[in-house]
Length: 330
Image (cartoon, helix red, strand yellow):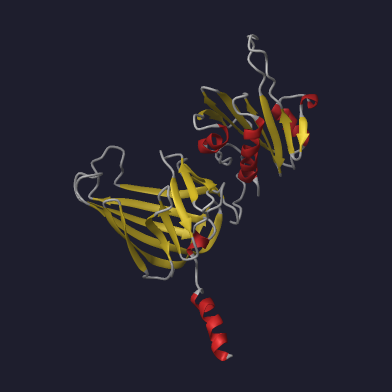
C-alpha cells in the first residue's frame, strides 16, 4: 500500500547527509604522521568494535566507538565519556558533554570546505569548533577555557587542529597555542597519498606500540636510521628486534628480501608469502648467543625483513607481518 511505501522510504530520507563514520577512520593499522614527527595509530579494534588509538606523544591509549550517528570517546569498559562527532553534520548543529571536571560544547562551523592533506586535495571537509571550560584547581590553577578548531575530512579523519588556552597556562610544557597537521597517512579506504621521493622512516609509519603488540609490552625503541630506507631497532630485557624496510624503483623480489634478511637461501623456508628463518636453540651450557630468527616479505616495491632474538618468536612475527604489509601497501 501507499502507507507501507512511505514507511519504508522515511528511514532512508532520515539517513541522508554525511555520516560521522565517514570522517573517523577506525580500522586496525590506520596511522597518521603529523608535521613535527609525532605519530598516531589504531593498534587494534576490539571484539565490541572499539578502536584503540596510541600516539607517540601519549602515555596511554584512547578508545573510540564509531557509528553512523556519532563518535564516542569511551572508557576501557566501553562506557561513553564524550561525544566527539554527532549527526546531523550541518552548519550550526551543536552538542554538549562533560569531560572530567570540564563542561564542553561543540558545533559545526563550516561544511563543504576543501583541505590540502599530504599532497592531495579533499573536498566535503567540516570544521568543528569545540570549547571546554576547566574550573580553577586541576589541571590549571585558575579557571581556563580550551578552544579547539578542528578540520575533519572524509575517509582520512582529523587533518588539522588548533588548540588555544585562555588565559595562557602557567604549566611547564603546555603551550598557549598548538597547531597539529597531518603530513602523511596510511588509512584503509582513503586515497593513497603520493609516495615521498625518498623512502625513509618518515614514510614507514611503524610505531613502538606495533612492536609491543607483537613482541611484548616491554619492547622500547632503541634507535632508527634512514640510511638506505628505514632501519628501526627495538629492545627489552628479553632480547632485541630489528625491522628493515627498503623501497625499489620496481617490484621487489624474493632475492631482495633474502638480501636484507642477510641469510643464504638454504637457511630460508617459504611459508605462503613469508620467507622465514628459524631461530636455533643452543644447549644451555653453550656460551654463544642463540642465532636469531626472522621473517621477510615483499609488498609492491617494498621489501621488509624482521630479525629477532628468540624472545620474539616466529608466531609473534607473523602477527607483525600483517601490519607491516598495510604500512607500505598502496
